[in-house]
Amino acid sequence: MSTPAAEHAPGLTSADGIAARARGLTKAYGSGETTVLALDSVDVDIARGRFTAVMGPSGSGKSTLMHCLAGLDTVSAGQVWLGDTEITGLKDRELTRLRRDRIGFMFQSFNLVPTLNARENITLPMDIAGRKPDEQWLDRVIDTLGLRDRLGHRPAQLSGGQQQRVACARALASRPELIFADEPTGNLDSRAGLEVLGFLREAVDSLQQTVVMVTHDPGAAAHSDLVLFLADGRIVDEMRQPTAESVLERMKRFDVIRAPSDDGGGDDGGDGPAGPATSGED
Ligand SMILES: Nc1ncnc2c1ncn2[C@@H]1O[C@H](COP(=O)(O)OP(=O)(O)OP(=O)(O)O)[C@@H](O)[C@H]1O
Image 1 (cartoon, helix red, strand yellow):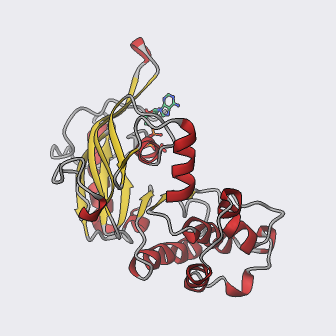
Image 2 (tube, rainbow, N blue to C red):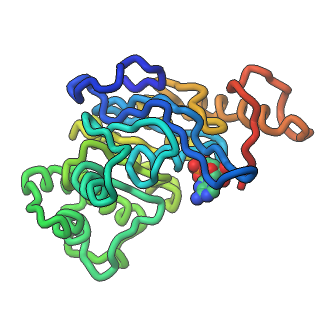
């Protein structure tokens, strides 16, 4: 199970079912009076073999959390582990190798190489790393994602949904310990988006992968096992077995808290996340 609570002491082995863990994770941008505290002492455990969604208002720190957990950004304080490896403190080169070998990424823009066909795009990270794909695994990924008859097509010859499926296969190809997906359905129409979410779900259920997805979309979050809600750089709530409706209802409470002077929206509910809503939309 994922939990933002500190159930597991740091330093336990990855056999405890935790794919990634942060303790006291703090990230500040800028300095002096212009400092923005994007993450404020976050404790989080990401459960292995689960689908975790990260939601929260704009500017709440979702992308920063993902980037710090994935070793794409440095932290200001605190510690982050991927499995047993503490990644805070690793040198750039070690981090690059760790990301390449142990983490898969999916972004809103599919980031495919236009001159390579689907299969070449899928294996590109491994080719760059000089690693041979596990053909059996690759076959399973390709079939699970329904890409078998598209492997020779270049991105321009594929629909948006198919391109994102290729990006998903690329993220899965090296059988990473963790897949980070940042708004993976953001550029897709709702049908293609649903399809990609179904495949991410399948990657967790059938291929035992671990997925962390940042999203603004309650319908997307409903495909996860657990939603973590961020506000002002802190995890303020979590929801298991989410539905689009329950996530939407929870998100509405952020709006009420964040816009007390707005006359347009809802009642003045006072049971939202702890702490003042200080971060802006920028
Ligand atoms: N490179 C940066 N320099 C300065 N401030 C930054 C930088 N990146 C993020 N921030 C600030 O950190 C806070 C968290 O940003 P972050 O992008 O993590 O939020 P988010 O929840 O992902 O937002 P959104 O939903 O709008 O993408 C925001 O106040 C943002 O302005």
